[in-house]
Length: 298
Image (cartoon, rainbow, N blue to C red; front, side, top):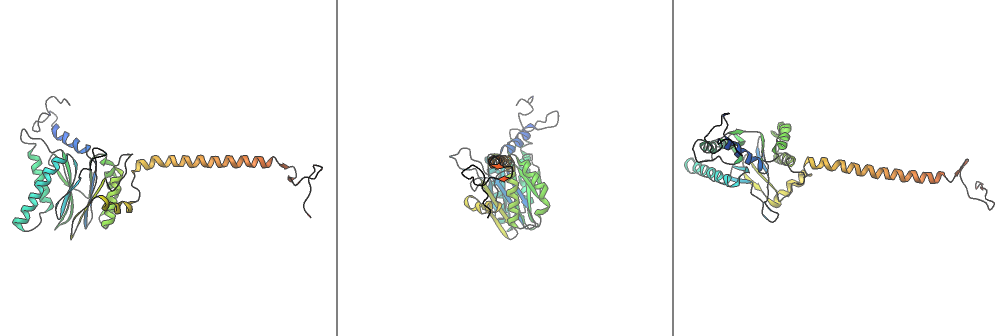
């Protein structure tokens, strides 16, 4: 897109004070499939919708474990996420080797934020075209952070990134007060419900396109993929998007109404036929040979 040469690099500001390459990186996140994260007092959960380029191709990996106490969910360019995840692994390994303790979640998030922000200060570099949700547990408890290509990081109780993530955010905003005191199973269920709302109308959650990751106080980071996800989908029940259900319900109601109308019409026709055989005095009895009604009452 032509921007009067203000989008040639990531260090030139437009007259309005905008850096267009950062905005392009944010658009790349919106093109990626959705990822949702949420936290309670004891657990942090990531759920993500995987996407395959072709029917014969495999699904793209959406959740990456970094250390035993935290991991990330991505939306956007997977190669950029791989670069950042490798950097985070180096930071986590250095903390264990030097200090013999797991790295604090805020420290590792700040390190990638600084790394991303440097790309907006040097000519010839570009912003990372990926957004991350970082979920983990440290001495302060469970945490959920969102990373953006501009270098901005924010901590959330619930967050969603990727395509159609606004629907997931709406669900999180309506229900976030319940997250704090729920157990692991309920927290995963809330995450799947938020992810379900971000689906396209012709899609539904399956064990093939859904990933779940959980980490808790005293529990290591665990990633569920493939058949292991089906247990959680069975607990969820309805896997179709709310928009698809809303479209199918009127069609079902219309079909039921049509069927009821047909039955009513049939009963009305049968009633008319019976009424045509009824005389002024009531239902007609058997006829005698002369054609007159015979009273069968003794």
